[in-house]
Length: 360
Image 1 (cartoon, rainbow, N blue to C red):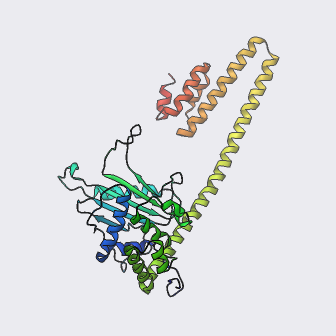
Image 2: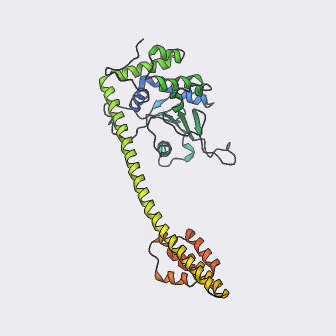
Image 3: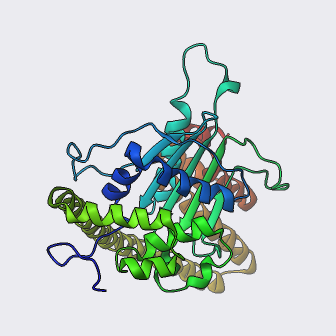
């Protein structure tokens, strides 16, 4: 059987966010969304739910491809618990923070005037990614909760759950990663990983003729065969590619600027260290030419002067220009222990005035 492709010989993408939003938000496909959510719940050892009512209907005709990120679907079950489902193919250093923001937005949106906090329902986020994230984790399905560090079995609240489904290694062909998943979740992950490149017969063989997955496969083929919805998916993909290219270009520019600034700072620090070494060498030569008493005094003077200069350099970096009165007080101190304490205080003080008060 020839592989299914659209009219322009372009493979469908089951992880296109406009496709998944269209798939799961359609009322006729509630059973597909329910199957996916229950696959995640069952694999986590939770009981299945019987209803998943979409709270954010998606209208692809009104969707703007240039919208930054979209939450694919927000649903509510028969217990009024919420499910935020997101399929993501573009990584970002702050991606985990963004998923936390989506979770918190759903959680706090429940609050109404006069409402008791005990009435807040669970919010369960399900994040499906195709890129490499949390490489130190071994399992494809990872559940994040807020737990006590010394006793992880003690949760701060049961209202927070975030499920990450990491497909990167599966897409690379490591199907053994799916071996210990429950069948429903395994089949869904196979669909997202390979549905765009497999024929219907191949998909049926891969998922052991799962009727749910074959129905989702048919919906995908219908979506990408429709010129209007296919073009929306293309526009969305082009936007995400351009967005990521722009981010990478900005990152490179920032890195180059940082290197230039670092070199300038390094040269200045190097010159200052060289001057300090030269002064120390000069003082050492002078001490060698002087009397034993002069040697000791010169060494103390050199150390205190160097310590004072170090403190002034730290102060200027933290608070800007340092008043001459502070400089005079520092240079007048010969007690090395006191200067050491003052150097430590630069890190802890909240203002230049706090530091000056400690000079007394």
